[in-house]
Length: 95
Image (cartoon, rainbow, N blue to C red; front, side, top):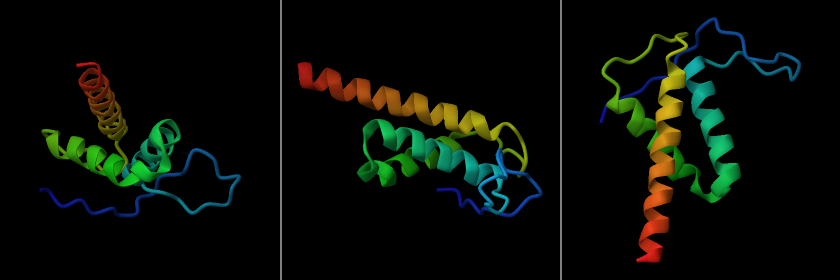
């Protein structure tokens, strides 16, 4: 599998009111995916969710630059992959 290294980049977070340090775009996208998806299916699934997001990153033809908005495409693909897994699980329960 490809190795992903998170590096600091001069990207401001969406909101600086919380006093958080600047978060690199890739890490922000992964954290947003984890937070949203774990709210839907449970916090105990964060390991699986991380794996799904990283798998989608590995499937990309080119890795986006550190501050590229294309990191959102990884998150969208991860949500799509998660939806397909949930649909498959529901179908297997019906059969």
